[in-house]
Amino acid sequence: MNITTGTVLVSTPLMDDPNFFKVVLLITEHNENGAMGFVLNKPFPRTLNELVEFRQCAPFKLYEGGPVDQEHLFFIHRRPDLIEEGLPVSPSVYSGGNFKQAVMHINGDPGSDKDLKLFIGYCGWDTGELETEIEKGFWRISPGSANLLFSPAEGLWEALIR
Image (cartoon, rainbow, N blue to C red; front, top):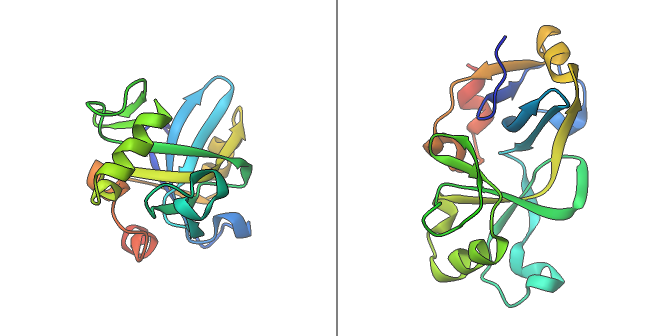
């Protein structure tokens, strides 16, 4: 089993954790300390401009990235030309970077949701924990493309679990 950054995981019916019921994950970091990623298909019930510190921003969809650190925003994007300092996750997808530039992109481009996703919280695993979950059949590795990662959440799990 080869888990790397950019790996897409789909939860299986064997997964009994409600945080991961019918979710699609993108792994954004995997190393000797464990793994980190974001749930791509769980919309958060509020938009960016409904958060007090971002009330001047455009309304922009937020996602529940995971159960860890739900006090902070995280993001992935495919616009390194507009958002500097992102870490490559795959050949055309980046994690994080200059958040002010990301907000400028959101406010300046009504179609920015096609190349940027914002998350509240993230998913994290200690060393070997994710691999154990995959061996137990809780996750299926799925091919992922940048278009898939930035597609609407509705029906994403159903399309990939087949």
